[in-house]
Image (tube, rainbow, N blue to C red; front, side, top):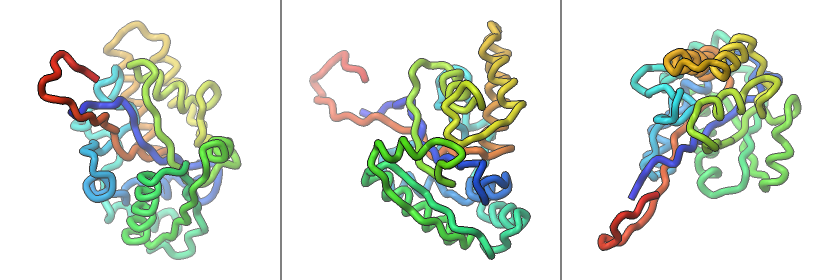
Length: 237
C-alpha cells in the first residue's frame, strides 16, 4: 500500500555564501539534477519528482502540470553556469553538501555529486553529520553552501510550507534568503479569506522560490509504504 506522505525532500542553498549568492548558479544546479533518475535508480520507492515545494494536494500547492519550477534541462544548466561566470565549470569554487546521517541520504547526495560533475563539470564535496551537529549547522550566514533538508506538513495549507519555512523574518529560513516580493505575497496570502486569491498568491510564491530565484531545489515528494494483509478491511494510513 503506497500513499502520499505529505513530505518533500529538498536541497537548500545558503544564498549568502559564494557561489550560491548568484541566482544563475542556483538555477544551473537545479536544472542539472535529474530527479526522475534519482527516484528510479537510487531511491526506488515510487516517489514523485517535485517541481515545487508544497506537496500536492495540500491547499495552495501547485499542480506539476502547471509547469512552475525548473525542469531537468542540462543544456540550459550549462548556459546558466556559463552566464554566471563558470563556463564548463571553470574556476568554480569549492562547495560542500551536508546531510544528516542516513544511507538513503548518503546515496542521494553522492548521486547528486555525480550528476553535477557529469553535466556541469563542478565538484561537490559531500559530508555527513549526526543529527544534532547537522541542525546546529543550519544557521545563516554560516550554514553550508548546499544542504539536505526535508519537510512534512503540520497542517494542510501552503502557509505551513512557504511562510513558515522561508519568510525572511518569521520563518525558519535556513537558506538566509530575503526576497521582499516573496515576503509580501505570503503575508498577503496569510491574511486573505478568499481561497481563489490565496491559491494565486501561493502559486506566485512558488514561482519566486523555486523558479525565478531558485533559492532551493525541491527533489521529490515522499511516499508512505506499508504491507497490508488482504483480509484486513477498513485500514487506512
